[in-house]
Length: 144
Image 1 (tube, helix red, strand yellow):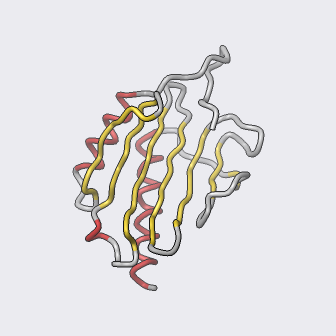
Image 2: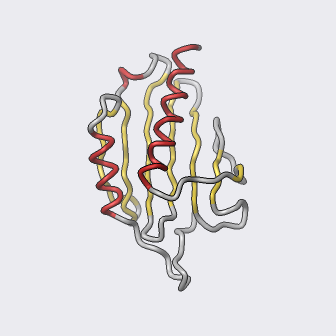
């Protein structure tokens, strides 16, 4: 993915205070074993590892990765690793040639292009929407 750009066409930097806010909020929940801001490939990101006890035994690992830019564009990846496959999806808000600015890459493979969608304007509401969708996914896993 090409980093989102500002009005001047220059790539927007990662918004560290937003990542820190989300890190603090997410770490306070019982479903997370670890949340850290890391520098991966020259880009800051929030990496969240969900507690294995929160998932059925069929899930080996579940993570959420957050990139939030100072122009309020974002990309948030959710991924589960199972013994036989990987299940993933992605919420995005950024200009691109394949979808509208707000779009969703659906599970199980998060294909491009994704589905046009719309997201709340406040970063806290975006995160809550995504965490609610992850909760729905976990409930569905337990029902399988």
